[in-house]
Every structure is written in structure tokens, then in C-alpha cells.
Image 1 (cartoon, rainbow, N blue to C red):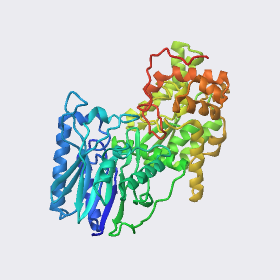
Image 2: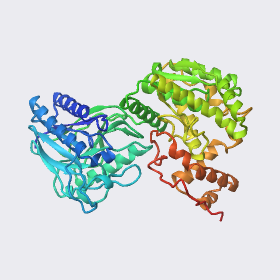
Image 3: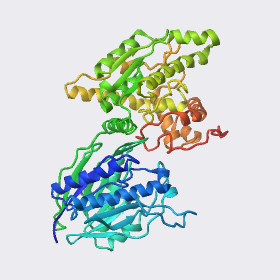
Image 4: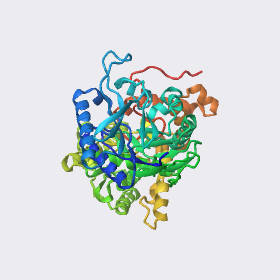
Length: 553
């Protein structure tokens, strides 16, 4: 049997940017051929970007994808790459489906050789959980696909097909394949990397052949794709892997002797704080770049949340493209203003000071508000300033709230909740502190100045909307709050289960009431990158109008 070289092209695509996605396919194919590859495998839905949601149902979109694929095949041949086997994902032709009253397209992988599509495979298992809604927009496939390259038999499946027992992977075991190629659009979530490799190892042992897992990378709306493509041997051993959160072309040789597989470099593991921080940067980078922004603006309060968002933004788009605005009120402390200025200097951001007292006074002269209404007025004036700067100068406004605050409604709608993107939307307060310390330690390890002032990390968090205010005036301590929120939101535990864990009844009742009352706020909050198993948004769909409350006994 001939030894063949397989290239895993871990790339960043953009939904709907079909022409640029097609150019990327050609570039990676050329690069792979130059490295001696016989086969290049690209991620799920490469031509169209992923996920395409209801764009899949537009005939014009399908025609655009089909035309682009034909052009890619022709361009490969005209560049002298016709003998290279290119495996790429796209939207397939519309077909009848017993699951839908109307025909649906498929989630398809195609094989290109000599200027034409020589084989295709339609994804069998269509996920319909969490962030996925493929069952709604696609028709399932039913056939297997095996292609031969220089006498080696390569099986082909797409993403979810290896997550389900039985089906095409089980069929591949009887096909006698030399390797199984898996095209993926697998979004990041904390700890998922190990789950993928362990699953792939089981499937490789099942088919008795190496499994080649290619994943996309980059930010797409509220999803982050972390790459981390890899090859596992027939015995489940990781033979080589690509770094995460970056584009990469990984080369691996399918050996003549199956008992002596080739091994390559294995990318280093990332600890949890690093992988989440890099996911936040990747998500923000993708959202800014793919939506045509060049800069971002945010309020700098001197607190930990805005400090971390600013650091993430500087890493994503460059400090010179970050505009930080201090908007002090009569309640703003001097140390908060000093910390905000210090932060901006550390990351190289443009720093502006816009006092809000004159504007608040103008509103108060007409409305004479007090209590929470007066506090919210300050937040809404700040939101108005940021949106005005966005309109005038073209910056993307970043909301700086975290998941803990969003869970209990500790934000002002149309105030600090305004923005186009919320980098910390899926990061609880406890993790905000951990990520801030991780980023500062990374800077120290590099011999750089830490981006976040130490006082922003150590001082008690406060919205500073009234004299002497701190968050713990109205919320439990954040370490306790996050434990309760994790149990109630992430694990769907009710009051009885929370009390059985040993949580105080008053704390449980208070937190659950706050969470249940804030659904309307969460529904209007900007999107942000999903980094946990259950993020607010498509992962957790609850009615806004609901009288259900956890029973007291």
C-alpha cells in the first residue's frame, strides 16, 4: 500500500462570504500541495461558513454556494492541482425529507478531483440541541462514502455523525477503510477538547483505523471555534494535533504499515483560564472583523469587569483601536478614575473623560428622580454617551457585564447593558478575577507590564451609583452567588436540590427570585461568546412571561 500525506486545513471562514471562503480553499490547497500532500481536508460547511441557520433555505444562497464550488473545482484544475484530493464542506442540493413537509438542503461534504466533484456525503445525524438547529433546516443523509486515493480507502463523515452510536461510523467498520476523515464545525466550550479526543479515540478503535479530525477556527456571532484539529491512531493514541485558536495546516502521513503509524508534533495543552481567555479574544476578533468594525469603545469605570474587557479588546484588535471613556459622576471615587486612566495607558488605548453630572442634572431638573430610578438614570446617561460616540465615530460598543450580574439582573437595561457585543456574557464573576490574574501573570512571564491595575482586581466591586455602594449590599458574596447560580442555571437544580446541597434558604430564595425576574433583561442583552456548556441565549430558552416559581417545599 502507498503512503499518502493528508493535510488538515484548520481555517477561519465567515458565513455568507462565499467568494472569500472559496479563495481560502484554493490558498490552503496550494499550500498543502506545496508540502507534498495527496489529500487536503477542510472543515464542515467551508464554502458557506457555519452555522448558516435559515440562509440554508434560500434558493439564491444555495445557488451561490453551488456556483462557488464548481469554480473552486475548475480553479484547482487550472492551477495544476487536479490530482490533489480536496475534501470540503458545503450546502448540498435540496431533497425531499420525511421529517419536513417541504424539501430541505443537506449538510454536505464533497470530494474534488480533476476539476469535478467525484463523490459526496450528506451528514446523517442533525443536531437539534444547545446552539444547534440543523434538524430544522437540513435533510439527513443515509448513504456512506468511501474514496480511494493511491489505493488507500478513506471514509468520510461529518461532525455529529461520530457523536452518535451506530450509523455511518459503525458502517465504516465493515467497509475496511484505511482512515476515517471527519469534517467538523465544533464550537468551543470549557473542557470540550478532551471530550472530542476521547470520543475520536473510541471511534478510531471502532473502525480499526486512524481518525483524522479537522475543525474550524474563529468567531461567528456568539460561537467560538477553537480548531485543535488532530489525528488519533487505530488504538486511540493522539498521533499529532494542531494548536488551538489559530489557523493552521497540519500534515500527517498515513503509513504503509498500519502497525507503525507516523507521529507528528502534538500541540501543548492549555489550562482552563488560558483557553477561556483566548476564546474571548477569538470571539471578539471575529465579531469586529467580520462585521466591518475597526475599533471598539467601552466605559472604563476602574472596576474589574471593564478592565478585563479592555484587556481582551486590546489583545483582539490592538490597544490603539480601543477607546476607553471614563464617565464620572458625583459618586465616582478618585481611585476609580485613577485606575481607569492607568489601565488605558497600560494597554495603549485612547482615553477620554466625559463627566455625566451636567447631563444627569438636566434630567433631574425635569424628572426629580430618586432611589433606583436615579441610579438607573446615571447608567442610562453613560449608555447614551457610548452609543453617541459609536454613531459619530463608528466604534463597536462593548458591554462589560458578566454572567453573574446578567443572571440576577444586576444591570441597567438601556444603560450599562447597551452595546453590540458583550465579551463577558458567559463568564461568571469568580472567573473574571481568575482571568484577570492569568492575563497579568502572562504579561509578567513575558517581561511586559500587566494590563490590569492590581487595585482593580483587589478592591470591592461597586457600581458607584450612590455613596459608599458595593455590590454585596444587594447580592450575596460572589463566590457563594456563583455556586448557587451554577447549580440552578447550569445544572437545572431546583430549590429542594439546592437546600439539600446545604445552601442557606434565604440565599437560595433570594437568588432564585432575582434570576427568574430578570429573564426579560437577558433576552435584550447583547450577544457575547459562548465559553461554558450552557450560555444565556440559544442554550437556555425560557419564557419571559411565566408565573412558575420554585415550590417552597
